[in-house]
Length: 330
Image (cartoon, rainbow, N blue to C red; front, side, top):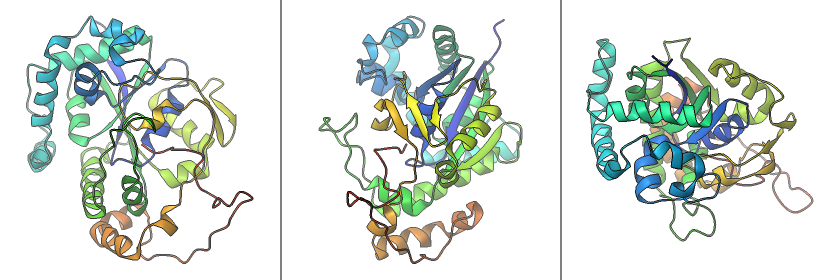
């Protein structure tokens, strides 16, 4: 019998830096940055969106090999089945099952397909660790219950005011040339999703020191090399030379991420620095709404409730210091 596949699962809410972390980890030997694998069936197989390498999903050499080992003819049905099994309304039942020590998500015939998928991905990529940035806690709980998966959970958290601001930006699904836009939920909805998914992630895994690590986006951008080294050690990734050109700059080669934020296509030298444009760009009303809806999480994860006064430094090109070199969020 083959050993289980080590999966580093990035959990939490969107726009918290998960794409950046995934891209950087994918530069280490023996690691595949697979992107949001829960969307492989719809966005990859059915929609044939671009792989992180730039080719359409079904034309990518890696995914072409993987596709031979999974029932791609049932991709639409598998995608629909996952959506139905992982709905938000099922979260209370999932948490009750976790508390009772039972399997979090009911077994399903497609579970064997998921096990085969991760095994095929690891084998064809020659990967000791598969990084899955799907984020949705119920999907991570489902993976953790599969016999062929050795799950580690990286909980990436960011100030909810920053994530709400980021969700309002207009972004093409697969880059600036894509006329189809990513979803732009109102700030109240972004705040509720932040609260629910971060709370559920912590509730499921935070008590397991061996399988759970929490990292804040703000700490990552303050010490990129140190934080990534801690994540790599947690995931069992051999550090090697690493992708860092200096402590705050990484050299990114294309990955084979199957879905996610369009920043997964970034390559070359990429500086890692905090994106804090929300501090000036988020209105007082939006700030108040998001803060009111996320107070318990703010306190739990160490974020201030009150808005701190801050002056904006301006660089030589008229760009606020701390503005991102590009889209670095996930």
